[in-house]
Image (cartoon, rainbow, N blue to C red):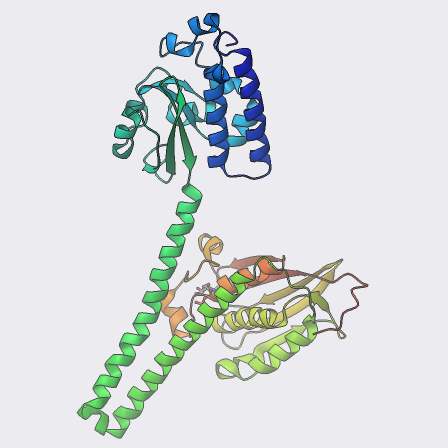
Amino acid sequence: MSQIISPRGWAALGIVAATAAIMAVIGVGPDAVIISVAGAIAAALTGAGGRSSDEDRLAPSALPANSPMMEPVLDALGEPVLDALGEPVLILLGSRIVSANRAARALLGSHVVGEDARTAIRHPAASGLLASEESAGPVALTGLGSVAQRWEMQIAPIGDGRRLVHLTDRSGSHAAERMRVDFVANASHELRTPLASILGYVETLSDAAGDDPVVRARFLKIVFDEARRMQRLVDDLMSLSRIEAEKFRAPSNIVDLGTLVDDTHAELAEAHDGRGRDIILEHESGSIPVLGDRTQLSQLLHNLIGNAMKYGHPGTPVRVSISRDGDAVRLIVADQGDGISPEHLPRLTERFYRVDPGRSRSVGGTGLGLAIVKHIVERHRGRLDIASRVGEGTRVTVTLRAPAINAGQPLS
Ligand code: ADP
């Protein structure tokens, strides 16, 4: 190895590799790190601009493409740099792979050194670029590794006809983009259904059917209900985006959770055909302070108690209790209903996920209530647990933080 790289090359390699390590540690993106790594290799291989005639004889261009001496170049850059990068990196001479780091061998197979890169990275978008002499990218690649993985390939020349190929795992951002697209499609669908219904009934009402007072009253009620459904959806969508926009700012107000639960109880007392009368409150008297956003905690209580009233069996109790545990305050909302089978539990907080879509819609659900609860709890740096037994009922626990004793702020 030391014969391939001149002393000045080693120095260049060390300096730039150290820079790359620092860049990785301070959170500079992998692209910037790879530029630095490419620079290090280029400098090392070319002897940083000055080679002796002895070194010229041992220059990498004089070595066979798959020389075992070339293989450890990347690994020799130092564990910290390449491990900090943690992504597949190859060196090509022409289109032949002369070196592959551990991540690259794990992705493409341990046999890739010596192979043609077009065989190792078998992808239509990649083969032309791998064969050319130019820098290229970023290019999106699918089908490497697992089906769900998405890669971005970049190619940079590093001198002496060699090029560095860097693969960045973009699976996470791809999944996030997929979720965003799905969300927009779901939201549009949810809004379009009541809208189509409203348009249909208004059109019918403007015809002869509108002359019959009984039919008119019935149709107008449907139009009103569908408009309310759209309104609930728009309200929930706006809440969700407001809460998400604030997610990095933890609430610092002190809220009396006991009073808030009492207020919510009073507001819901007559809701859902008097089902609110089944609510049983269990909390100590006096203030129960938590760090929070009053409006968002009120929304959380409405959503959780609302669900317990909607999905619990009519006439059975809906228990709302608050207890303290050190600097944590625990809120529990429990109902006696059909419960939820275990396979649904992990997905309940996904937007528009419903166990029984027909039932949810018939009780006025938007499919966003628990997604909103999850985001509120996350913003409060709290914890949400949903436990349920089929045929028995559901119990939702939210753990919030009590303020420090000497917080000295008025309750809101
Ligand atoms: P929705 O508006 O449909 O109620 P949520 O996001 O509040 O939407 O809840 C998602 C789904 O979780 C509901 O559609 C329902 O299937 C289920 N769910 C929520 N709370 C309960 C509960 N207390 N008991 C049984 N199922 C529940």
